[in-house]
Length: 251
Image (tube, rainbow, N blue to C red; front, side, top):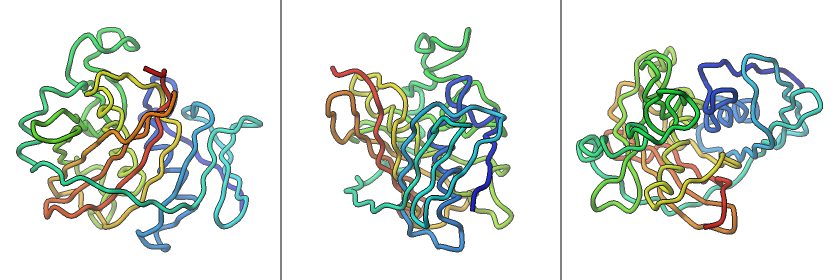
């Protein structure tokens, strides 16, 4: 069955296209419904920037695959997948919170897209510091002493909770996005756009909890930069994880 989806402008990453994590999660929801349970990994390969505020066609190939198109232009390919990762132990929430000022989200002089904007992506739905707390997630991942990667202490705004008080899956996908890129920035590497994201939801995430999100570098193969991210609840349980491919220059 084919349907359509509209990515609203507030879910942007770059000014004129969707946040890679959010759109991947929104597309994945069309393949894995909440009734399927949380333990289904989905891989989303992004083929073109996702336009905002216009209908996109979601085309079912079979029960394991779908395409997203804008007219004849292929935007994304979505498929069920398997995800196996060695997830590092995260820093404590308070430790991650104390490191926030080191986040690229809050450093001046990094933005070249939004005039006068703060940080690396000032208006990004995930990491934008110039976005109101009811319009963006404001996840500011930063290097943390003693941790080989970056971490963010995050208290979601209640507006992002569903009727049962949990974070919808596309919000979790969005939250897992930028920390992967920031892990490479910690190593002095500026990658390009998110090319592929594979994520798995392991446990429901209550919006009222104090959450830690981590990102770490996995490998670099030519222009492909592989990163991992994961989300932990305040009991220290891993609730979601992702493996990402960022496309950038070869250093």
